[in-house]
Length: 86
Image 1 (cartoon, rainbow, N blue to C red):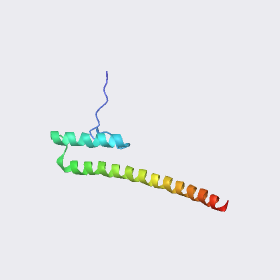
Image 2 (image 1 turned 90 degrees about the vertical axis):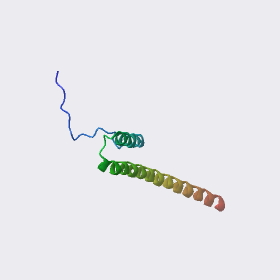
Image 3 (image 1 turned 45 degrees about the vertical axis):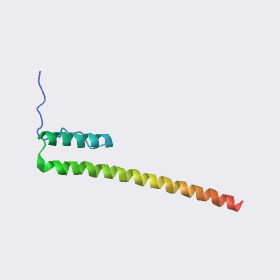
Image 4 (image 1 turned 30 degrees about the vertical axis):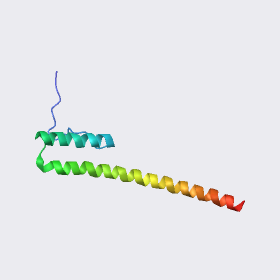
């Protein structure tokens, strides 16, 4: 029975691909930092990266919602203009 060699450069923390995983990664880093197993020099930057990723996701959601509301306003303007003509 053979085992795969462990890649010392592999990142064992959760990926930063969804909000849930980013929050899990944030908690994972915090837990290891508190336990003394995460390098102090990298903890702040790693947490900041999680916060930045969450803000980027939030900004994207906000932009999408604003576009939806703009389209709804335009639709309502057209409906209102149609009623004024009739």
